[in-house]
Image 1 (cartoon, rainbow, N blue to C red):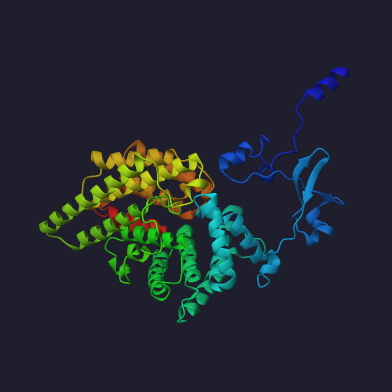
Image 2 (cartoon, rainbow, N blue to C red):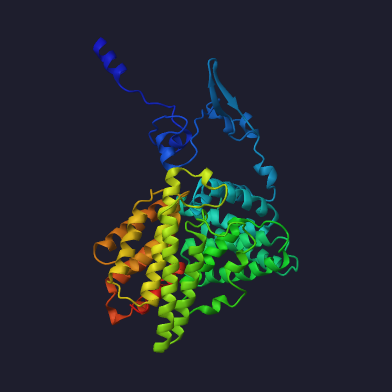
Length: 498
């Protein structure tokens, strides 16, 4: 009997002192402080708390807790025990017009949905501090934000708490957002221009991440954003600093749209380039953009590449080929200068950003930046120089993209990993042999982490391209069959000549 007691006492007892995140996810916690191993690896806030129970119920579900809603938690240890703190949340008082379901979605946006659109915790904080206050004053932005949160909830939870029909609920939110947006745009005063631009950004984000069957919807939003940007610039040129997050998003989307819109130049009829709009908004013109994962001047060069390829496709003479061959030389030289600057010296970030980044985060930003550099080189060499897919220069960029992406730690948001789909897809269109399997695995892993349907559709397009690349010798005809892929469908237009 004594031996049995010794045996039982020697067994490791289950600990209940893990951090809140590990408990919530039912994962073993190493209980290191101030950050446990799992939270440190995921780069999220680690918090140790103790939930009180009252009459067999947690405090927030007791009669006492109705007024506090779960805000009682253990905040620290002392020789005499520990300290509990409580604060009365103001979420319901701030948004009395929202239903319980909508309030829950707004909270879900701040805590979860915003993670997979941000490249670090500092960006997530800045995004929420920018969007939520504006959403309170803008029904268009509020409904768009709730729609995005609802889509994320369905992707990760399979449902929206309080909504019986998720599809109709999301469609209703987007419809209300668009209706309010139309009303606001009819007003001559652009005093809420930033909120309207944030609305367009969120609606565009919804379409891109959903993999909607309407392949041109997100492009319509970008075209609207361009007109809106010009209107804001005309009416508010001297009204103070504009939100850098919104304007950098627009500049990046404008460049990527140009890069992937060969033969679709009508999209750019409205206004000038994003480079011109951006001037005067920032006091630093060239730096590694912590919102988009690559340098600001690389973004501009990618737009120039797209413009050149569109013009080349519209011409046909040998003289045109010579002209664009020289332009390819110029653009390639610009990329090489950017690579020499960014890859051989300390990265330059926007003032105040680098202090908020870990060494690993800076390294992964560098990897993401390099992946986009080689994406640009692929477009120059395949579309302007018209090199064959198996040329050493093209395959070198394919392998470099795979190497960079493989070195970025897989993460559920708050990482440059959220923007590597475009480089992976570009490399996938050119990959040969075992490199295709590597890209297949990387995209599948990315989809499992982020649950963004467009990533899954990107892989489906590549699988069909790899299986049918020799059909009639025309990849473009094959890829048009997979128009469901929204953003990535447009990326595949550059494969027409393969």
